[in-house]
Image 1 (tube, rainbow, N blue to C red):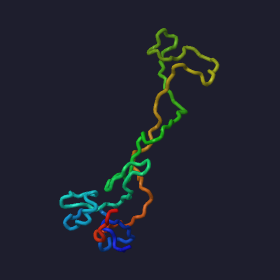
Image 2 (image 1 turned 180 degrees about the horizontal axis):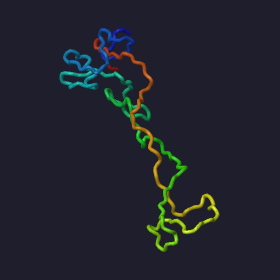
Image 3 (image 1 turned 180 degrees about the vertical axis):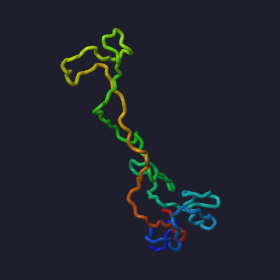
Length: 184
């Protein structure tokens, strides 16, 4: 097998530059007239106007994936770009859950008028006109029809966070000269 690369072959290098016959995969716009062989292989899959220019793949900060459709996955086309470096969660992204409400402070409006009035002001509970010494009510008495509504304290700050996998930066380069690949 020849050591000469196929035109359009992408290789990974551990140094800071593209070697002779390669260009960095950084989305550069190239002239079709000066790179006809490479253009005939990749066309405008990565950009360009297709009349005078085309673009190289841009793998800066990107993870390449294979084209096609794997089992249970969407169909991916050559040159398709997707994904985000950060995301902001919203409540619909979270699993269904509940927050228990354990201690509730309930404010009940009361009238300062005596409770012996036939029509107490606003139909509010009132103070008694005489001392009242009665046994303490049993705990957990159901007060029919009583509802308490409210919200728990709001938390979070809607700040986007990184969803990038751990990474190691390397150099992706594409062969611009070499053997023109034949189809099977």
